[in-house]
Length: 535
Image 1: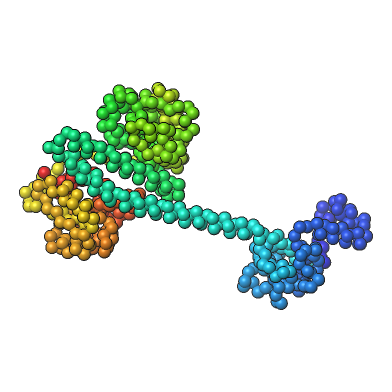
Image 2: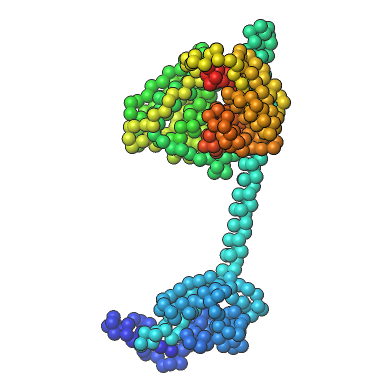
């Protein structure tokens, strides 16, 4: 067997203790010494002739070396060398490259059972630098591979379960929103009737409150599921806190006014924050809504925004009920309302848990300090933008549609075509748009029928449910756009598909507006009036 040791010793000029032992003892003791080392190894070890594949030296293993003389006979139970087609051969790689190599292989034990092994091969050179032998040892990783396989299977099963849960919740959201659209829609129409007796007006408000509470629960559970399964996609941008707070205050001010709760805010100049607009608004709405709901009549809610090194801090301070110290550790648990379910205040027990997860997704933190009976302070920290410039967006105004154009007035009746297969939703739309003078509505419960009506009537506006029985809303939209009459016509999606990806898909496809069920009836009326220039 070739040995490079002499060359190495000449280079170093010194002898190690092992080399001194080797030099001072006779060949028999040397052999015993080497055998002892080899037999102490807990894995098979061989020295293989590079050209003939014969095993020159091995330790004792459960593989009967005396019955097999080549590496391919011993480890693969075959009569010829590996051809490299089934798997790469470490010995051949060592011969070709002169480098050590480590590969995963399948070896067979003396009972012909396949074993997963990690094989290491190291070349031995002669004085001319040619590979003449190869050291090979193999670690049995069969148990490890089985564990990895089980873990992969468990992960895949968990992923499938999460996907199934997500699909189920998405489907349930759609199925619940469809009847809710009729319930809340007709309730809104009743509430708009000024001749309705006062006690019935009160009934309408209670129905609306319960319906919106159910809708809030559906949305929160769906969002919580999406966060848990990693399906939330963020669009982080530079934002000015004032624009977010204006939108949030507009949405809670009516509830605050009813309870005579004052809303104040102070924002430090230059506090541009990096966040997802929709999700930051969602978190702040939850904190503000809670600050109003769990407050005393005549109480106060204050929002402070200020910079702190590389962070922007949002604080929501209220003079409300406060939270007992022993319940604070449970505050961000999903579906835990800390006993508030025994009160008249409605809630889902999901909002704070969801707010925590969304804040952390945006690389932020959320926390609270509270004194029972005196109030609470919730805060969130988010990354501060490197630049003070923020993406400018038009301020959302949910209470006004601006001046209506008069240019088309007096030019005849406007036509609206509604694709919808649910008769209650058709009836709701008829009642909603039937209040408008100069407007005529057509409805179709199939795509084919709707397209035929459109060809004959040439509508000025198309409203479209995306789940028609014979064609999807996207296919109908394509037919509309390809027709001579429908190239420029406004087409509104009216749907119970409310996920972010659904909304983005709809806008990308070319829908003029994407309206989600349950519909905001007064908002829809104003939108149609503006679109069609109606009085």
